[in-house]
Amino acid sequence: MATIEHWIDGGSVAGSGTRRGAVFNPATGEQQHEVVLAAQEDVDAAVASAKTAFETWSQASLSKRTKVLFAFRQLVHDNIGRLAEAISDEHGKVLSDAAGEVQRGLEVIEFACGIPQLLKGSYSDQASTGVDVFSFREPLGVVAGITPFNFPVMVPMWMHPVAIACGNTFVHKPSERDPSAANLVAELWKQAGLPDGVFTVLHGDKLAVDALIDHPDVAAISFVGSTPIAKYIHGRATANGKRVQALGGAKNHAIILPDADLSFAADQLSAAAFGSAGERCMAISAAVAVGDAGDRITELVRQRAESVVVGSGRDPRSEMGPVVTAAAQQRIESLISSGEAQGAKVLTDGRGLRVDGFEKGFFVGPTVIDQVTTSMDVYTEEIFGPVLSVVRADDVDSAIALINSNPYGNGTAIFTSSGEAARRFQRGVRVGMIGINVPIPVPMAYYSFGGWKDSLFGDHHIHGPEGINFYTRGKVVTSRWPHQTTTPDASLQFPTA
Ligand code: NAD
Image (cartoon, rainbow, N blue to C red; front, side, top):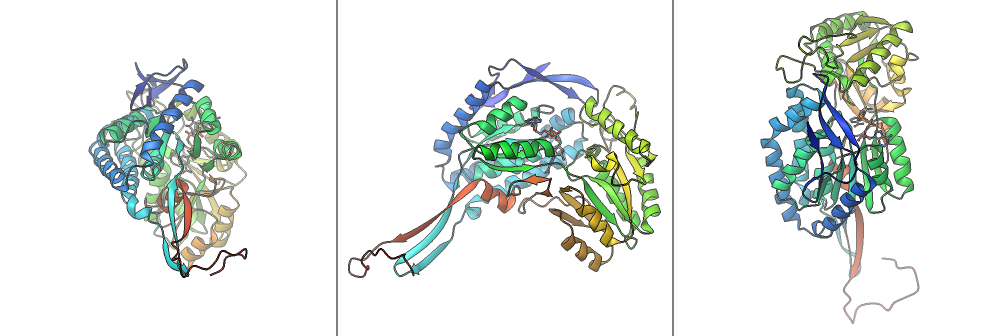
């Protein structure tokens, strides 16, 4: 069994921590690796290395940084298959989906390749007589990224290409459930010519996270994960004076209006609910069926759910793999049972699914639950599994009101052929990312990704322009090069133009 080690100062390091985490293959249900879990001294060593590297990397020219980014972009592109296999073997998602995740991460690297343009400041000539004003942005220092299990390559790539392009050094604390991909990424950064210490991987659990958010030499924290941890990290790290963006969990609703192409909507809903076994923060987990669309869309989605091929992520016939751990499997199944006990109707039941040849795998089949109300656990909890709940609404306004009364505000979608209804929806919902006949509206890398309400704590969304702002701080310079004969005498009055 391989031991996955930290990546500090440009190489693998076992560190001084003696604790280990078990890494499973969710398809077989068997442990395949162990991962080192950092002790305080390992966190200190990782941050010290990143701090030293910042001294030179923050001074590297834009041209040098761009060269490294372009090389890294090519290497990630050339290694999509290898990265996808590492993801699939530890997360469980099917290979094509894992490759799609790497592709979306690659797009953030491509965005970051434009760093000379993105960091351009502004200049006002002759703002006052003989006075020019200009602005520019500087990196923060050592920044840390703490990431969830569900996108072990893409979510960290929302952070590190942008942070590093801006001149910071980056310490990545991946999920301990699927840690291998982070080390592959570290190798690719090194091959791309990134100096040692600029990108660090620190494996660990709560101890490592707490040590990072308390560390005086860490300037900023990017976090993506569940809402309770996002809230905790935001509170504790901001109290420590750090800049924080903490993206949390979700309950994403899709409204289906009677005027929608229901067959199209059912295909899209099924893909958005069951893709990656529902373990996406942008998965649709609640369908809000309006008026007489209700019974028709529910029946069409039930048919789609029953045709999804579930199997090992490595099997090219599989459309959906297992969930990440045995604990996740049990939690999802018990939430389905709670829905049933509270009066909902389980139309397609994914509990107890066994896959031939993978009997110990952590599989849950696609599940459709009808007649769900907003007080049921199956609605109030983020299930994070392949479960679609159908709730009913009388009209578009009550559907929007239902979405707005949910504490989460990550993503949402509407299926309709009415531009007027779509516009009312896009302006009325209190949600950060909105799809119109697009079920998973993940913004392109050159926009910023982020939810509202309990789906994001902090002021900055991630990647895109807000990512550049998050990883830099601004300076404004007011300058005068006086000509001896024309410069007015200094005055105690407040300077005016
Ligand atoms: P998680 O919150 O359990 O873990 C995320 C990270 O926090 C991991 O690195 C983990 O080691 C660390 N962590 C866990 N418990 C901790 C604690 N008590 N103290 C300090 N650190 C702790 O999340 P997960 O189960 O890995 O991922 C799934 C969650 O992430 C879902 O809620 C999903 O919606 C969310 N997510 C959100 C987005 C988004 O963009 N908003 C994207 C992906 C995933």
